[in-house]
Amino acid sequence: MHHKALESARVFRAEAQAALAARLDRRRIDEEQRAAHGFAWVATSVAALEAVAAWAARESATALDRAVAQLAFAETVAQLVGGLPMSQSELFRPADLGLGKAARVLEAECAALVDADHAGLRAQVAEALADGQWPSDHFDDGELDAIRDQFRRFTDAEILPNAHEWHLANALIPDGTVRAMAELGTFGVCIPEEHGGLGLGKLVMCVVTEELSRGWIGAGSLGTRSEIAGELIVLGGTETQKARWLPAIASGEVLPTAVFTEPDTGSDLGSLQSRARRGEDGGWIIDGAKTWITHASRSDLMTMLVRTVPDARGYAGLSMLLVPKPRGTQDDPFPAEGMSGSEIEVLGYRGMREYALQFDGMRAPGDALLGGEEGQGFKQLMRTFEGARIQTAARAVGVARRALELGLDYALSRKQFGKAIVGFPRVADKLAMGVVDIVMARELTYAAARAKDSGKRCDIEAGMAKLLAARAAWSNADAALQIHGGNGYALEYEISRVLCDARILNIFEGAAEIQAQVIARGLMEGRN
Image (tube, rainbow, N blue to C red; front, top):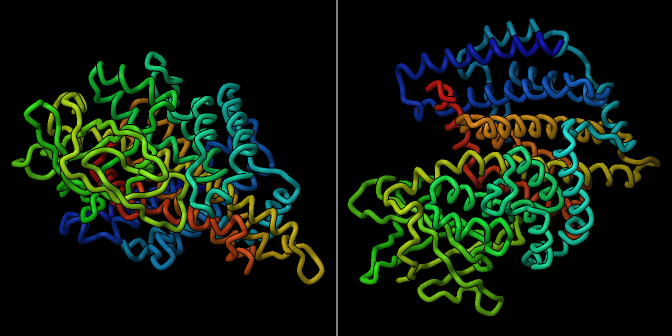
C-alpha cells in the first residue's frame, strides 16, 4: 500500500511543480509566494513519506513501526488532498495552485488510506507508548547505535535532572557539564581526525545533537557554534588557521560564537553594515553592531561577518574574520577593549544567553581574515548553511521527543473521572500523532544528513528537514502542554520550558518562510 500511495504522491508533487512553473513564466516567485511555499510544503511532505517508507521497509521494522508509517501516510496524503498546514493560520489548499483535479485523482488512488477510520490504529500506537514501547531508532550499525546509547545515558544522567532548574535561573550551562560534553567528543564530531576531531559525518552529528537536545535545547545547541566555526575553518581556512583553531575547538578548550546578524538586517545578510578596516600595524579595526549573538560572553572566538570592501555592493564586500576574545565573567561579561554588550532576555533557549553587541574600534590580529582573502565571507558562510540547518532539524527532533515524553508521563499519572487521562481518545490521539510527527521529521533529517555525507549539494534537503522538524517540535510541545492542562502553564512543570524552547526552532538558522523559499527556488531551478 505504501508503494502505491508514494507513487501517487510523487505524481501529485510533479503536477504541483508544473503548475508553479506555469505561473512563474508570468510572475516572479516573490509575487507567487503562497503558491511557491505551498509547493515547497508539498515537496517536503512527499520527501518525508519517502524517508518513512524506507525506514518502515527495513527487515528489523517492528509492528509499531509499521503502524506509525501507516498513520504517517494516511495523514500526509489527507493533508495533500485537503490542506497542508504551513502555519497555524495558513493552509495550502490544492486550489491555491489549480490542483483540484490532481487532488481528486490522488484521493481516489489512495482511497483505502484517506477514507479509512484510523481511530483504532491511533489507539494501538498510544497503547504501545503507554507500555513503554517506542518506534525503532537504531541504525543496524554498531558504531552509530553505541554513540546514541552513550549520549542518551549522558543526557539522562547529567542534563535532564538539571535542565529545568538551569532554565528557571537563566544560568549558563555549568563549566563542568561543558567539560564532560567535550570529553564525549561533542565539539569535534565533524572536525577531521588530523585536527583533533572525531572525523565523523553529519549523521553522527544528528544523533549527538538529537540526544542532547532531548535533555535541553541549550545542551544540544552548545555544539552548534563549534560545528559552524569548525566547518568554516575546515572549508575556508589557511593551514595555519586550521592548526591553530581546530584542535582547540574540538577539545572544547575554545568555545566559539557566530557573530553574523545585525539589528536591521535579519535574513538580508547582503545589507550588513558592520565594518573592519586595516590598521597601520596590519591588524583589523572593527566597528558596528551585532545582535542575537548566542553565548557571546563565555566564548573565546568570534566568527564574524563584516564588510571589509566598503565600495563593493551587497555580498561582494563581506569577509569572515576569526576574532579571538577573552572569556567574560559574571561581573565583567565583555572584558575586550572596544567591545561591549547587553543581554537580550528571552522566553526560552537559555543556557548560553543572547546578546546585542557593540564594536567601537575593537582590534583583531592581521591573520584573522578567514582564508586570507577578502570578499569571500558570504560564500564561506553559505557553505555552512546546509550543516547548520540539518543540525537544527536534529535539535527540533530532540525537543519534539522530549515534549512527547513529558506528555506521555503526565497522561499516565494524571487521573480524572476515575481513570488515567491516557485512556481518553483525544489525549491518546495527541500522543499517537506526536510520535508520527517525530518519526517523519527524524527520518527526513537523517536522509538530509546522509545526502550531506555523500558530498552532494543538499540545501533543499537541509531546508526540508528543518522546515518539517521545527513544525513537529512546536506541534508536540503545544499538544503536550494541552495534555498537562493548567499545570502545563505553571513554570514548575518542565513542559512550560519545552514549549518556549520549541518556538525558536521555526525562526533561527533561517525562518520557515526562508526555508520554503530555498526549497521552492531550488526545485524550480533543478538544483541538487
